[in-house]
Length: 413
Image (tube, rainbow, N blue to C red; front, side, top):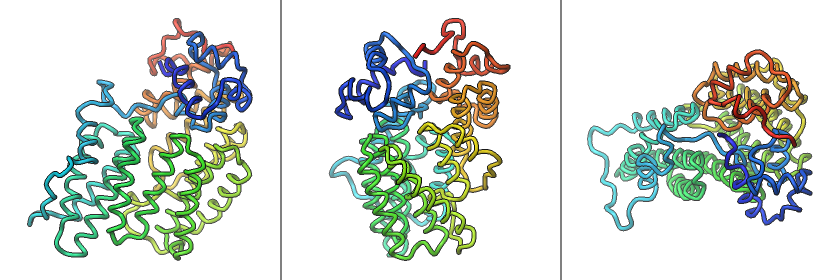
């Protein structure tokens, strides 16, 4: 069940935020009695608007409160052999042997392509596949970084930076944010020895996202703005790749500002990002888009939809999403999030039929992703609590493994 540990998670996040139950009630505008019932296990779930309010009061993403879609295999072991192998690759044994230089059959281009494929698989939520490949990717990148030639060595460190950044993202999805930060710090060290000036700020953006997951909103905002300013001041926003990295950092800063209840600053940052995104298509293009931050008019609009839903403006979210055209550079994960946010907006407006239509589209587009996504499950359970069920809702509940007879409602608050 998607929210069976909601009370324990709520209590842990509240204590991390140094809030009493009464203080969280005041910040979230949720009754202290509801918070107590959830934390004490007397209530096991909550309606979606209540979950939104609690997440906002805690300064975390809603998925942090509900639990992420698991980046796990069918065993459900988030410390299973594959992840242990990733951890060992990120943190090799102390005083272990230095990597040997690559042999004559080694191909830097092939390594780069494998890493790019790993990012594509990550954005498609193929986490098992990525975890299986990561140890070899990191090991081969360390080998490439031991190349004798300056250019080859710099390319090897760039590959190592991207591989460790990918490992950091997987660790976040596994709920291992401390390991993620270790991996990302080592990725930044590798990037410092590469020849790509955009690599470090791209990894900084991943650090900012990890800080957001930990509720360190001021830290996330500060490093994202600092890195974005450096890119602009160094003149890198005159190329498409440079502007994409700047834009991704600016959107990240906007998200941190919004979660810190500074909506005016968030809106100003997103408006600036949307204006600048229109310039991307007209600038000199870079290399493989799979290895660069996601930033385009479509991605900005998707993020604006997400923020509008999360902060209580569902009609604005639907207006922003209406008629949106998604360009080819938008990863599948962003498309699925858009459909989920549209479903959330319809749910918040009491439009169960609209929510079911969006969820049905999501099921067609990403069935595996949806089945494991705790927020999708929460929305369906929220819809089931309504007195009238639109056509298609029962099929979605059965697809997600919900027992409609056993769980006829979500809650009463």
